[in-house]
Amino acid sequence: MAQVRDLFVKKDTSNDILKQSGLEKTLSAFNLTTMGVGAIVGAGIFITPGVIASLHAGPAGMLSFVLAAFVCALAALCYSEFSSTIPLAGSAYTYVYTVFGELVAWVLGWSLVSEYMFSVSSVATSWSAYFQNILAGFGWRLPVFLRAAPGTASVPGGRFDLIAFLIVMVISVLLLGGVHESARVNTAMVVLKIAVILLFIGVAVFYVKPANYHPFMPFGVGGVFKGAALAFYAYVGFDAVSSAAEEVKRPQRDMPIGISMSLVIASILYIALATVLVGIVKYTKLNVADPVAFALQYLHLTNLSGIISLGAIVGMTTVLLVMSYGGTRLIFAISRDGLLPQRLHKLSPKTHVPVSNTILFGLFAAVFAAFIPISLVSELVNIGTLFAFALVSLGVVFLRRNPDFAHVKAAFHVPLYPYLPILSFILCIGLMLMLQVFTWIAFVIWQAVGLTIYATYGYRHSLARQRLYK
Figure 1 (cartoon, rainbow, N blue to C red):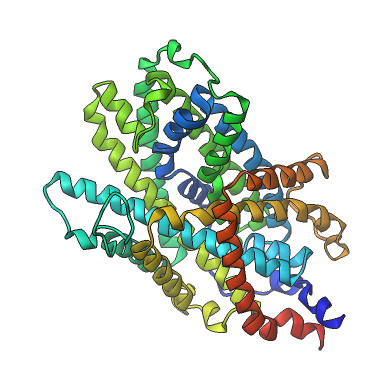
Figure 2 (figure 1 turned 30 degrees about the vertical axis):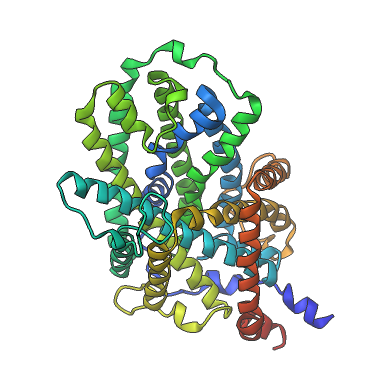
């Protein structure tokens, strides 16, 4: 029985909250908001609205984004309460460790490692394809074997995606310079990206034809829900904001603001673009790789295509930056708890950045991007995130009942407790059940690898378990 109890030992966060971790506190609510928008609004905003409209929801695709935003908003409220109560690195992993214990936290943390790493890999692959298209416009082309990963259908003969590998490593080098410098670069790119999106919406709205909105729901209500499951992928980035808790000047105040505002801004942009897009082009014509660029060509506004291309590549760069940052801070937290080697949470005395961790994460993500097709690496992203959202939502109920936090005055509380956290949990589980069987199989295999690592290393080196027997 003692060994079973050990598996569910809970993390004592009281000392961690009071002591300095060594991470530099330089981020504000504005920095957190731009980080969230940078992670959420990527290349997907130029692609997913067309896919959802043409294959799943028709003009009602805008409702798919509303529904996905609603589910994410419920999870964001739960994240906000946790982040203002437990302002520590590690995001959902740390929260779950506190209320459910070590084994559940490890399973979730390992799921989030896949979310961050495979998000970076899949976006890097898209970044590479987009960048190579721009190079091709100037007549510059890489040798075929360096253009894509093996098995990429669009590039027969591909063996190694050189551009994808290099962009991930460039992002890693940028992160090694320190969080403040990385945040400044991210903010500049986010402002540029939003300007490009607003330019498209502002111009395209004058070409909207009401007739294109009929029939409004050609695939029925079920199509809207299927579209929401796909749209959910576009919103998952706000989870990375909570991973910055220990580098925020006033975490109890700024974390809820950053999480909530980033989701609100991103939701408005997605819904507005989806609404305008199906208004200017019939939804049946939008099953293309780049529906926004297609719409501009359809309207004979080819002069804007270059600007939209710039917005897409900048959008992907911000996603790479924020998701890489989130992944390194998650590994930092897991290592600090003893479940991964200690070297992974050692900080540079100059930049206050976990150097080994950042380099290792970048190398793995770069190798995955270079050698594995995007169709495979992107499968694990959604299920890992939904799993995290579900456990955080349920965790709020247990957090309120935990006597260890009865004295903590959180800056934010989820309204309509416990109904909203429970509703969030149910909706997240529902979206998980809509994912493909292949995704579940991949999830189980990934967890088997993770449990092997925990059994052979994490269990024996767990600091929480060591404190249990002191």
